[in-house]
Image (cartoon, rainbow, N blue to C red; front, side):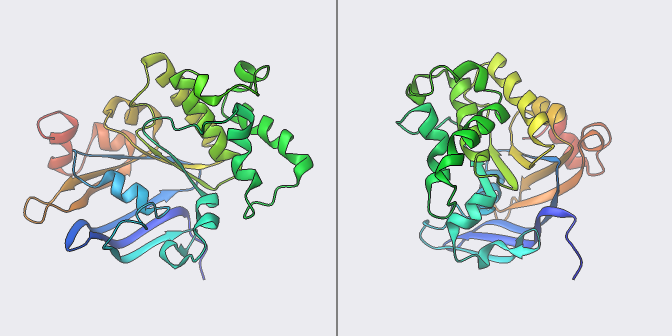
Length: 260
């Protein structure tokens, strides 16, 4: 069997909420150690696709899927242990969501789960490594016992990133991670993504086209089928080509602001 070149692969993947098809026939790859941006108008299914990648929809009544969504060649929907899947595919949400506990315990949380089984004497070291990896250590090293909720919005988002990378995932999913942040905090997150991609594959949903242009290696443009209301992939390619020389006129219309 060939070794997959992509961390995440979608092959003719469709997703349903009951009878409503939210995504139709999605085919795309997220190459290893690259940042892939999902862009497109509201309702095109970007967040639905992202959340399908670590099965955040599993508790949604009536959800179902067709086709294949693969993690390193393994069918994501064949995983029986969701904790094991989410250890490999971490998630960062639009609004920072630190737990109501100390900074240290926020990062250590996943390390203490049975699925992780991190040795107790390694937890402090791994918490520090994760906070350094999230470019937060120097700001919090003297207040690890303080509540994570006391941090600024940008610091909270980096704390959530530290919590995600502490368990050493392969993929980081980011659903508009800067939408609730000011420009300075946004810049720090973007700089952090550029560092993290050396160790992780990153897939980001963003409505900010400038951000997609700045941080991503590859861009996937999704739009909505006007007849079925389902999201579909219009075009996939290197970000520079998508923004400077798109092949599909619908992509050009969206990038130039004439549509969307």
